[in-house]
Length: 322
Image 1: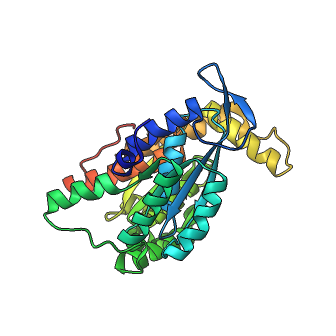
Image 2: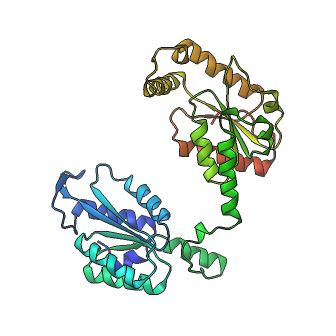
């Protein structure tokens, strides 16, 4: 295993390597509940401590991304947000000492992080700074030093209030509501029922995009104003009919409704999807197949289209499937 001093300066790959070593060797734990590892041996539980001087969202995302690489690993996460004083840190270290494991942190105060490093090294615990490598690289490229203020990404600045406005707009323009405002949107999502329009819209809103979503129903076509939009990027969401039937049937069951209706009839659903695809093609809207995509993956594809449109200008994307 790398020394604690080496681990302090490493980026996320150091964390993944250290986590892999810890899970395969279980070098530090007092929890004796065993389980079988992917390496063929018996492993014990690993404690992962996440320390942040802010909300800790960054740490949670990094830990989740790294742990996804280790199936069936028995890892207990201990979350310690808003650590901004040595006194607070000292209280936490007592609990870390009782459940020793891997320590991942984001602390910008030099004194607090130095004390954490010293305490972890005294306990023989590996410690990883989640942002050091990225911050150092940015300092070198920008020719300036980081300000070292905790939680700056959560500052209530202009971008924060723009994101709040985007969320409010998106909630108010769900499922085809307030068509007269669609021109104010950044993105308009169109698709048949249960094609992930609403959750994708909310995810995009949290990224700062004003989104309207519109259901495509053959017996009730959308208003003509949809086809006259100029400012928003209109994206069609489609899916495989078989997958759509499965999702819709599960939805009906969750509502205690009859699972066999025209809403899940194979021929009806196939025609519905075909109708939507034809509309997308006729209007030259880009299309995203969400059949095997998560909400995050669909949103990422939409954002890529939006950025491409900003770079190339309206009318350049076409109706190619993604």
